Length: 119
Image (cartoon, rainbow, N blue to C red; front, side, top):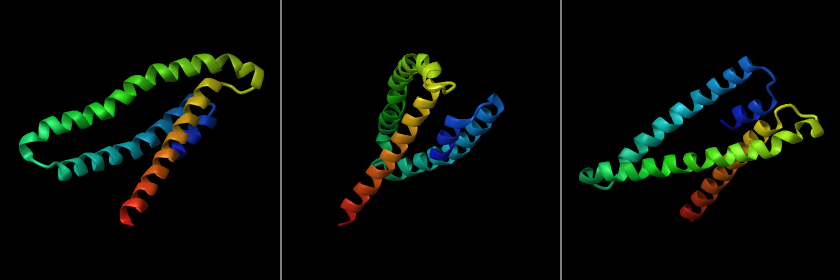
């Protein structure tokens, strides 16, 4: 998924962007399916499954609700500098760059937590 975000930073045509988005979806679909299966395995009690899954879903959706207007504001702020820098669609490229940083940060956090947990 990181690779597709990097590719989206450099594509110049709409069909290429659609292709990269499809590749992202091909990675995201299996990821979210495995995540859901793991969630079902770690639920403590079957009676509370609905409540626990609703909390999981809220934790999944609320950041997306907040991130959308923030990303729009970042795009609107950065986009006027496209002509100055000479980069087409600079606002979107900055947003995809932030996604790459988030993905890499999450990977680093998970690896650090795993190493701490194993020792």
